[in-house]
Length: 267
Ligand SMILES: NC(=O)c1ccc[n+]([C@@H]2O[C@H](COP(=O)([O-])OP(=O)(O)OC[C@H]3O[C@@H](n4cnc5c(N)ncnc54)[C@H](O)[C@@H]3O)[C@@H](O)[C@H]2O)c1
Image (cartoon, rainbow, N blue to C red; front, side, top):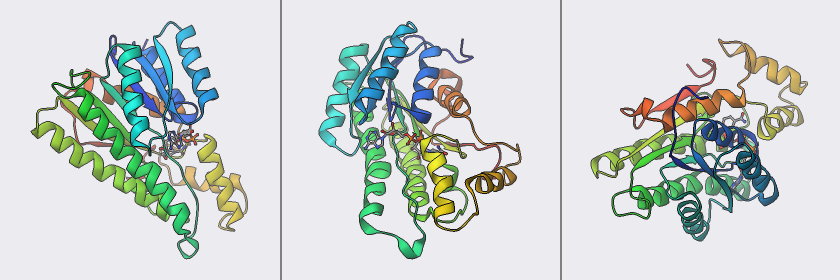
């Protein structure tokens, strides 16, 4: 059982079909929440929802491309209809396309801006509309955005990605300010994960070799560990536990905060 109780809460996790989002969805369910998985990967997303249901949680899957306004309207409706409410949003969906600054491709950068910034902003918009007084759910809640250690350090070949994650940080602060001042009853925070060997994390290490920046993925990972005071890579559960904390009442007086979950790499 989780240290932080989410019994009766209703959560939507974007990008919940695999990687960090899958782990976050499982941790939220273990803490007692009902969980909707929203992702573009329907088959994997349904599998995760099925596993949550098999474990005793109320769960479902909804097709959600976070860059599309209509998808957000459908995802919020599906969450409220399936789970009976909506009071936690984990804005986790994201992509990373590696490039040296001298090789940035406008189309690829635009895609990252779209998913990581527009997707997060639309999530905040639709969560606020649903959770604030008079909204479809109307009970307030908590939003956790997933930024990155990339927003706090300089690492080669991820300038565009780092910019999008810095934007997630700023979106978090202003959204938290508005939600507090306007009486929405919604807290907004973000975490900055360190490198975790998910598909995205391992591809990033491989890209460093392709670009000639490190001789091998193992050497790149070794150097990241060397930059990390706690001396290891992040694990999915490290990020999931931080998200559960920020979604729970244990963090009830915390809003507009960015929590590094990076073993000290970004300090
Ligand atoms: N893995 C890391 O080292 C690391 C470190 C810091 C931050 N992050 C961030 O954590 C989040 C999750 O990363 P991950 O490592 O699990 O990546 P991942 O690639 O393993 O999973 C990302 C998930 O997001 C989904 N997704 C992508 N585009 C989407 C869209 N337009 N709409 C809906 N879903 C979409 C994918 O289908 C996938 O299920 C991302 O925001 C990432 O930037 C990851």
